[in-house]
Length: 67
Image (tube, rainbow, N blue to C red; front, top):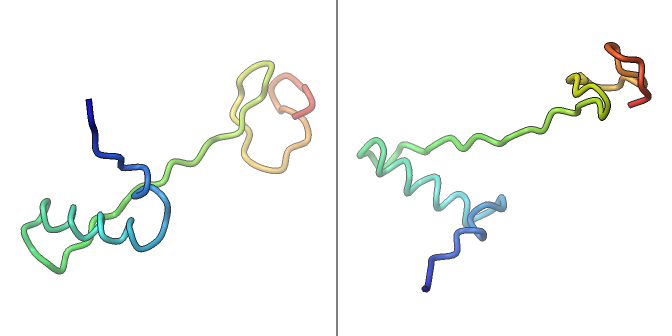
């Protein structure tokens, strides 16, 4: 089964800009609309208790394990 490979559109650059413009045209019906693509950010978590860490903590505030 053949498919259309979309991985080249995931990297930032010219290809991703093309997809933004195409999706904007499909969603709004206007040429000047550009879709906004959300980027997922991973939250650092403690390995022992799975507590969400905010930034530069050296130790987990919940269980005290070194982060």
